[in-house]
Length: 319
Image (cartoon, rainbow, N blue to C red; front, side, top):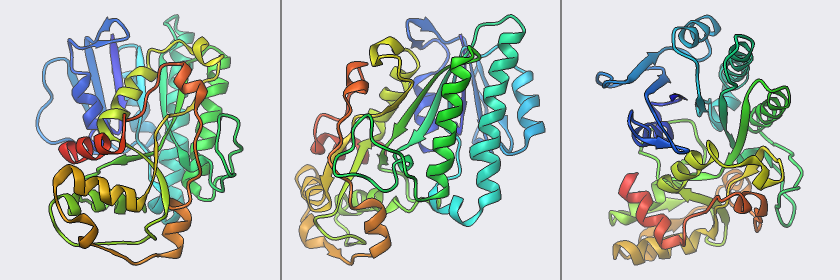
C-alpha cells in the first residue's frame, strides 16, 4: 500500500508519518511505501519513505511529484496556510488551500482514468468552517465561515464530496478542532495561545491569557487527532449514513478549567501563574464555542480524549 501525506513535516503531519512508517498497518493492510510532501525535511528518508520537498502551491512541481510515484492508495491532505496567515496573504492561501487541493483531487481522477483504483482521500478540514455558531452545534449546523481559511476549507469539503460522487476518490473530510500542544513556533495560527498556556503553566512559568476565564473552546490532544485521522482512512462511510464530511468529537472546556487541569496534572500553581488580559478579537474567534454534538462521527467510531486531564497530559508529552 502506498500512502501519501502532504504537510508531512508539520506538527500534525510528522506525528502521523511516525505512525505510518513502512511495515505499519492501516485498515488491515501493510504500508509498503510512504511519500511525504512538504517545503523541506530534516535528515534523510529511511527505506520505503520518499521525501518530496517543494512548494505545494507550485502546480507544475506538484503534478510532477505526484506522477513520479506509484498509484496512491491513501492520501492524507494536511498541508494548508492557516488562519492568520491566510488573512494576510490571500494569494498564497489560494494557491495552497484551493489550487493544490484541486490538483490532488484531479490526480485521483487521472488515476481512475488510467484503470487504477480511486485513492482514499482524507481531507483535513477545520472547525473554522462554522464561523458564526448557533447555540448548539450539531451534524446539521450551518457553515458560515468568518475568515478566508474557513471559507477555503469549506470549498475543499464540497470538492471532496463531489469527486467522491463521481468515483474519482473515496473521500473523507474531517473537521479538526484545536490540536494541543503545538511547538513554540510562529505559524500564523491565532489559536497558538492555547498551546502556549499549557506549555508555560506546566513548566511553572507565568502566562498572560488573551481571554476571560469563562471563555469556552474546543480542542483535542495531538495523539487523539492522529488516531482520528488513521480511523478516517479506514472507517465504513455507511456507518455515518453515507456522510463524508464529519465534525470530529472533541472536548469543550472553559479556559479556567484548562488552567486548573494543568495545575492538577503537573502540580504547578497554575491559577496563580495566569494573568487574564482579554483581547476582544481572540475571544470572539476562540472563546465562544457552544456545546458540540457529533453523533455521526461517534457512530462511525471516532472518539475524543477521555477527559481534560488526559488531553493536558498527552498535549505536553508530545507538544
